[in-house]
Amino acid sequence: MQNRAESYQEWLLKSYINQMSQTHSNTALSWRRLYLSRAKLKASSRTSALLSGFAMVAMVEITISAEEKNPIPDALLIVFGICTTLLVVVHLMALMISTCILPNIEAVSNVHSVQAVNESPHDEMRVCVEMAWVCSTGLGILLFLLEIALLCWVKFFTISQNTAIASTVIVIPAGILFIAFSLMFYKRLMAHKYQRHTEGLRELDEMARELDNRGDGVNII
Image: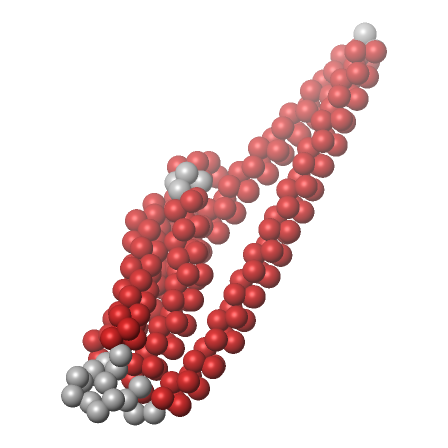
């Protein structure tokens, strides 16, 4: 009878320890997501502010004269204006999201309490965080490369079209390399997340089997 009581207390203690360990793991994972969201928002805000500012300066400072012997085609000017507007809008969208969400995350991350992570909106607004990240570092940089090529055409069209062609030849491989790196990066990132998720499920399954075995042992005694 005493051995059965000791075995049950031992099983209960280990079950409590396993439960607390799982709770600690979930809290640590939530803190990791918070810090990752904060880093993404900070990077998005810096990148968006820099690139949108460059696009605005490029549009304001460029000089276009209608009295040139070889005037710039209207189609080129329309494409340049659309690209510049899209570039500014995309980066300002990312900047607005970062400015709205980042203070709430910063306020929680500075609190010295383990359970304070539950007050952060990073999980509820994960879609917005990813949208800001993609707009700033993905779509925004592609539009920025296109902006550079169009800016060279608008700037050098009346002077030397060969210069604009040379600039375009450089920008196109750079854009292809950027897309290839982005696809490879996200592919490896997803593979890493899948591997970590699989390992976590396997650990939970082993823990559940161990608890079931111990529970059967207690019932037998």
